Image (tube, rainbow, N blue to C red):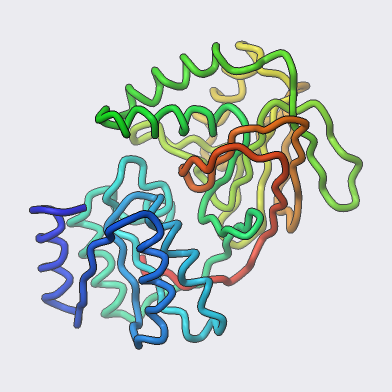
Length: 294
């Protein structure tokens, strides 16, 4: 974020807080700034960004070995979906979010949340393998060519990708400690909180994780049109995050560990950021990892 919006946020924060600002210059820069924030004596790291930069900052904060020395995180929504900030209960517009954060700082309010760990990278709300990651990869390529991200663009891209993806040969095997492996899966979503994402203002809830209960899982054995629409319909209607069910659905909640193996490279994302293709990812829940102000 830059320009007028960033200026308004900086002025509002600076009117109440002793504030230093940095503009990120490249991918990974936010993580480096966050990693040095504890040693530099900062109490709170505020982001004005989308979920990708928030993820960088979270991973930077987790590089600070002593939990007591990690600054708290206050995310001001500045991207397209802003899933993490909205899940924490912050208003979707930056001005209202700033006021909520300033009120929480004044009242000394902060809380600990758990994070998911995928391989060696932490995530705040979700990670996915398969068609949802393919859609995110498609959108990133479109944005690199100047196309603006929007709900309509995401939906159009999702439909186009659904009919282009390999719906004949499932690649994934799910492994949960103490359980037999589940073969023949086309996609898998691991969530640390609910919702999984938003379609405009409408939450999509495949699970009921709440940053403290462990990781939830949603996977599909088939990518049939009716099966997929039924699962999405359930997630769009759900208000309490009850897990989808059905012959082609695999779901679980409050997991401490799980892993996916793939028999060929498969698309992969963390917190809505496309990470390319992978053939194996191990997941673990990390309780009480960071403090948030929201």
